[in-house]
Structure formats: structure tokens, C-alpha cells
Image 1 (cartoon, rainbow, N blue to C red):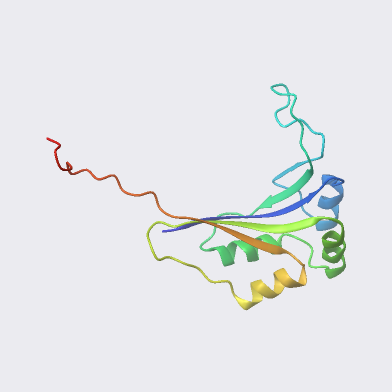
Image 2: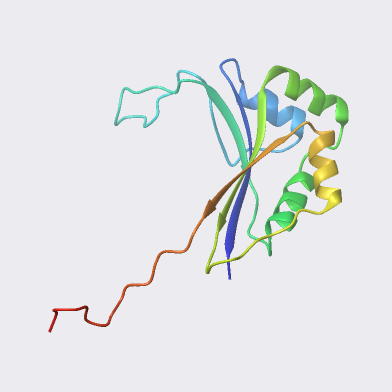
Length: 141
């Protein structure tokens, strides 16, 4: 079976994670502000921008993951319009194929919900790892 991962991500130099969480009515899975340490106590490198991210729970298919993720957040179009005007808002989808020629669909309800919230969607699609050839090749004993 193919696997997938879905996360709503909000980015900005001025992003304040607590404000975004209050607007959306949900705590993030991960967040940081610009200038926060990448690895506190282990590095002096700092974040170049702020981010608020909410990962979807595992579900059967990307469409289901997106629907369950959006159900955790406010449906208020004014909040989403405000977020889209102030921040970069996107939905990251990773799709890990288990074989060749696999795909997925997004329902019209999901596409409509994303469009109403002005959420851009991106897909990273990963092919399965090639199987190791266990038979000896030419010239091998």
C-alpha cells in the first residue's frame, strides 16, 4: 500500500505561532519564530523565517488526511483570508508509492475547501526503491 503524509504549513518572517494557533483554534504539531535556534544547545544556527505547521493523522489516502486536518481548524473564511494576505499558506503532501503506476484523487469537496481557504497545495511523489537483484550477474560466481 502506498503511504502519504500531509501537513498544513504557514510561513513568514513576522509569524508569531501563538497568534496563528489562536486564529485557527488549534495548536501546531511544530512551530518556531524567525531567529529561534535550529537546535537549541547544540548549534548557533537560527531560523531564517517563522513557521506554524499541523500534520495530519495517518488515514487511508491523501483526500481523507486533508479533510480530517481541515476539520480540526476554523472554517471561518475571514480568518483564512487574513492568514493568506499576511503569510504564505500551503499544504504539503508526500506520496510514497509502493509500486509503479499508482495514483490518488482529490474530491471536489476537498478542492473546494482548499480554494475557499486560499491554500496552495504541493505534492512530492516518491517512487519505490528498486529491488535489489539477488541473482548473480554476468561474470559473477
